[in-house]
Image (cartoon, rainbow, N blue to C red; front, side, top):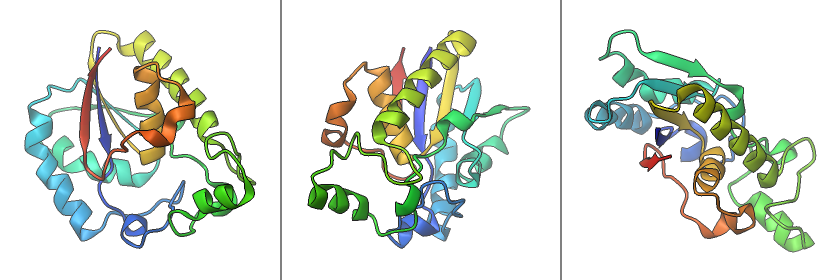
Length: 181
């Protein structure tokens, strides 16, 4: 199986440096432009299945490409939704990490009030990998998603330990990474 990771294009929350978490933020003009620029890159990949979360920014990111193909197979999967930052949703990027540092909490395992930890997201990512292997084992699958989920998913693909989560390079908006599984 080939798995292609694509982080959604820039959103209004990304532009204002806010943690959008599970807020349904819209793409900015730059994000819309980047989505159109993805068309030629995605055409080269011969994708069989597109998996997205229910948040609109993912479909908005791949829609320009989907408009160029006949009857794409699109799967909306709740497991791929972005990390729920709970009470930290909508705060400036870095607020959660600062809170953990100031209070001696482990950023990977600390679960914010009304939210989930990175370790929780990693467990979802491992379940999602099993789902893909069971259902699309011989296909090329594009997963258009969110920064934290995709990082956890990449670590699951590579069978790496989640405790080192913050040592890795996150996907940037509209960035693509490819894996053979």
